[in-house]
Amino acid sequence: MSEGFRLDLLGGTRADVYLAREQPELVCELDECGFSVAGDLPGLPHDDERLRRILCSCSAAIAPEPSDTVARIAAELDIPVYANASREITPNPSRIRPYAFLIGRLERDFTHAREAIRAAVESEAGIACLWSDDGRHRTNVASVRERTRLLIKHATFVIAELTLGVESPDRENPSRAHEIGLAIGYGRKLMLSSQEPRRYPYFSIADLQMTFWDTEDELEQQVRAWIRVERDSVARTVFNANPTIFTFDPKRRYIGPRTKALVD
Image 1 (cartoon, rainbow, N blue to C red):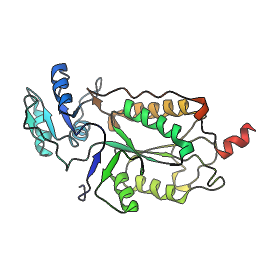
Image 2 (cartoon, rainbow, N blue to C red):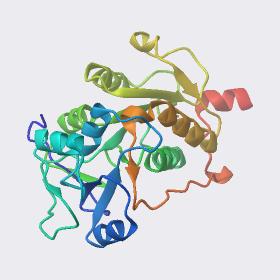
Image 3 (cartoon, one colour):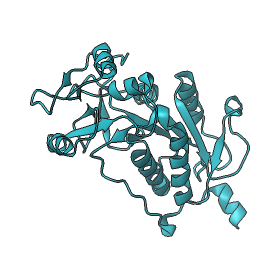
Image 4 (cartoon, rainbow, N blue to C red):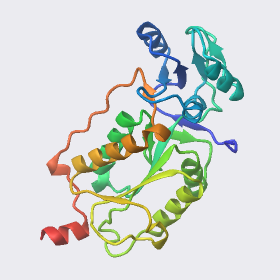
């Protein structure tokens, strides 16, 4: 249930359309109409739940000869199925398009790290990566706290980046603890990362693996690696995706207060 929650991804395609198999001409036609063309992951055995996850965010499905499975799941989700790129296909605003949600530092000095995470998510999982003030999404919820709750609830997965900053070098941010608790409570897949090697900051997540990184290029590779491990339940193929390339810039490297102490 979306609880009436609406999410618009800004500056990109208008909606997602499922394509049963890649057809370059059809992909091109849908791309020109402003649709993101999504499909199942290659190289994996069929799985109803994965197909349902990918289909549930789509405004329509296109399958010239739909399999019984595609037809059945589309019918369950009330998604129209077309034989080709029909002009009748229109965006369905009630469909929440897939995205990952980032919990972490939103300060300007951490911009390069956020760029690394976004590039890894968009390239490896084929979905958007959002955080609360990224300016690339719009919702129908005015309250920041409620909007954050719903963004976590409806996320495909959550990345909690726990690196400390100069604004709070000696203690963990309680807002992050609350947001991580929401992710766990809603059963979201959760990746934890931090630049500083240290004890787990919150006792309730001590049984979860945390990834440590030194530079942003390491962070990007670690996010990619985590997605590859979890791809059956978090990723999809996007046939008309533009590659998201991350280039590490040493001049923009973030060095946290505890990391700086080790370096010095």
